Length: 78
Image 1 (cartoon, rainbow, N blue to C red):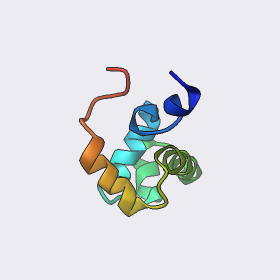
Image 2 (image 1 turned 120 degrees about the vertical axis):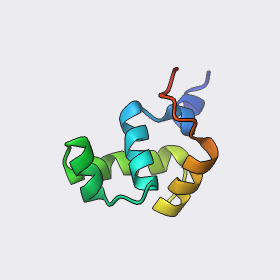
Image 3 (image 1 turned 120 degrees about the horizontal axis):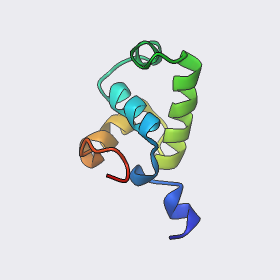
């Protein structure tokens, strides 16, 4: 598979990115997501920047839409 396909889109999200994605789509702030996942808010921000790039979106509303249309609750590769 071409590298561009593997590095973009829903299937390219890592398990950590999927956890952040789901929590943000549920309406949690970066700080709240950090508390749930026991990471720093900076780590959450970094994950979000990667997620936005992979999904070619620019905000939390678009991310929530992606979750509604793409998320089956499974981890990648399962």
